[in-house]
Image (cartoon, rainbow, N blue to C red):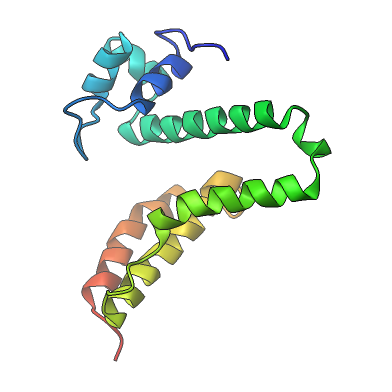
Length: 158
């Protein structure tokens, strides 16, 4: 497997995908990421114009790396894999990602409902953005956070 070169988009993604001492929940900044990747902030911003773009680049990088490793283990193109392998690989992926998305059982029903209500539009928006199907116009996109915050502030339905 090739190692991404420093100063490139894949090099910056690779650097930011690795754990770094002292990096907390909000510890990734464009400045810190640029320094870790051996770039100036403008050089990093050439590849990733925002922190969100950088984080999405990291997710893409990790998913690409994971896919390459799976294909290496499979030893042939995915299209030629037996249905058993596809099912097993899908189940393995679900097992790993599900804990990040599943709500704790001990949450009160009203809180669970509100969190689910917040997640569904986010999932739909992400799907629309990722697939390009039903894209959200910029003027509508700008209003979405305020609308969702308003719905959240209203409290649970009675």
